[in-house]
Image (tube, rainbow, N blue to C red):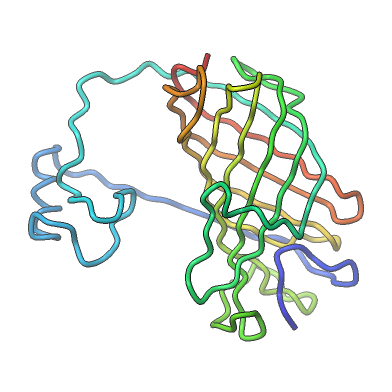
Length: 239
């Protein structure tokens, strides 16, 4: 059976268990760290992917930071309607890898709460979920992984996903939160959950110089057609 991120109304699943842990250990100063990267890549781009480094760029060429910005905490939340058959993920740069199958999901609604400079506006949240399986088109290896439950036919029901949350406060002023994380089927039937980190990228208007990072959570219910997001982070130049 083709496994999809959203749970079909007849499916039943168990308790969601998810732990995403990122550990970064820094044991040297910036010069020695860059020296290590040069050894890894020979002073050039490594043949393998380096986390956080654009393709084709030498990891050792990361610019030196001369001024550390002062960041402040902020949050925002909103609710909207779900489209589980969206087709416009590519319009915001969410392109499925070659020979993989990705589900494009979209929530459209209104920001109704926030602490900090962003507390109102409209939003679109696109999420591209890699749900490749032997039964998908094109077929491929299963990209799901266990969610901590052995209940139901879809107990292996978590997938990696990437997305864009675009919040427009006034026309011409849109802040884009780029996110990546895990999308899982939750207990109860028809429940889809997402949790990931975010960074602000490619924003417009008075958000064009904004910088921020943090976490975003999202949940939707197939039977109500609603999706709700909650975002918390820290940033600078947000207004």
